[in-house]
Image 1 (cartoon, rainbow, N blue to C red):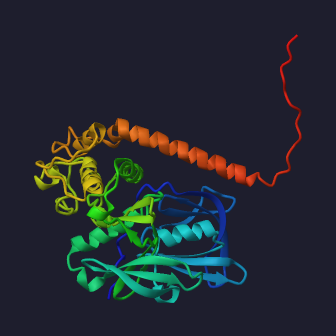
Image 2 (image 1 turned 60 degrees about the horizontal axis):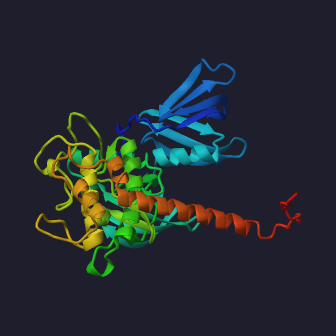
Image 3 (image 1 turned 90 degrees about the vertical axis):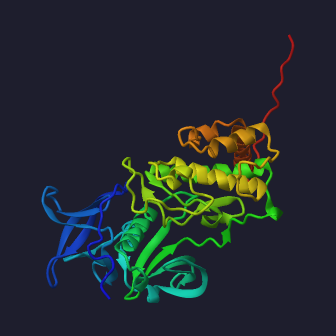
Length: 385
């Protein structure tokens, strides 16, 4: 089967910037050129050492095929192939290797990971719990079966999902580690989180608890939006937990880069009961579709029910105002993330959280200094004349 990522390169603003790193470029059978490497966003450039104006070669590392190897004298190396261009570079730092693993495509998944068990499934494949054979660390692997990707839009969606996941770097957002390809499958190696949000009558949260959770999800969503990305499928199934208090926004299968013209790969998408009204009615939409979906999740945390106009739950006035603002049918009237954080109840919970964080930091500082020898000091007193 053909390579999936051939002619699937792209350029995107990543913030990557490595400057003045010396590496060795193989230029012949046994010849190496000492050169200066720079990596800006996804473009790797090699310049003649001592003459920075002379470019020896360059390559786009996004979806390039990479193969790591070692040289007795030259050190850690990598072969990078993008379409018909191929470079062999030695002298990699650990940082550069990690970036190449993130943006490149490797071919030796079976040699690097051992599959432990299946933990999920989707339209095009399955999710497995795996173990890295070198360091025993466990990850989740999202596997796509190539034979099920019949339409060009399916392939484009996966390339975009990988592109978006590579930009994620936040404690409340799922991130990807590396990508692999075999003749039959694509593999996305992700962080492993085995706890998922569960909504039921037995685990309804109090307002303070629900808002504490909401604030962390808002922080993750604000980060996603800062990358000009709309998630478009926020729901309990797509919220995982690092522990019982730290939620993780996951599954970017329907995510896309925001466009003012409103033309997306999938125009109408999401999950029933969580989709914002403007998506259903085919209106132009923006980041506020995610606020609506998160409002539904917030309502479920408090009631275990999907919100309906005729329901009459007894929330506090500030909590009800927050729900009303997040679930406005008209997107113009719907709260933004800034509006949510200005809610009185949200601000009170946020201040309390900041106090607890400060107290925790103080406690850590005290414990670290318990073994420090005490310094004898003289008592200070004020004597009357």
